[in-house]
Length: 256
Image (cartoon, rainbow, N blue to C red; front, side, top):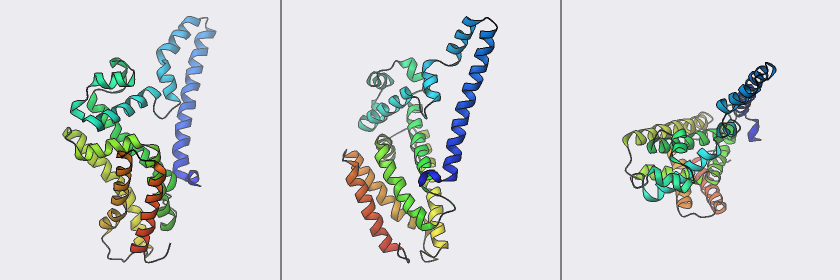
């Protein structure tokens, strides 16, 4: 099962322990104030330390309001262009005030940077679920298909913004961030194929970068086309699997 991946379980456990520790500390400090007959100070402490939005945020990967703003911003920017969308427009569409948006983000550029980082984080988490460094090339190659299928199914708004970032005029800082994140992702995936060469699934002299590109680039095209046309993800998953099976017949020396 994917969830048995040691790295994934370790990361999840750390997050839960951090949440538990936060609430234990909060409970201790509140009790001290209450037992000292300072009830109202305890109430003020709670409100000051943990406003409602932060309280919810502690229990979630991304606070609900922040996620809503990101999704709305992704849709608007990918449809109209970064320079044609204002902070006011994002706020109105998301149903939040400007102070709320500025609570989470410095400016509009920071919103876009967060979307790029979020896309990388979600891919990395799926990678940790389905790819085990100690497993065979065969197991991890099949896991890589699941990474792409699940990412396409769960994060269409991140895919739309990713496509937009590749083709649209944007601040140089955003372009550099996107390039860096793409390189980090490709580096992770390349390690899978390097192991495949070591296990003699490919000729020893094959060009590693082009080998990775031969699978991931068509995956990216299929996903982008489907998401941009707002097609159902079931046919997309099937098409990814079809290309995956075709790719194996063309490139692998061993039958998987």
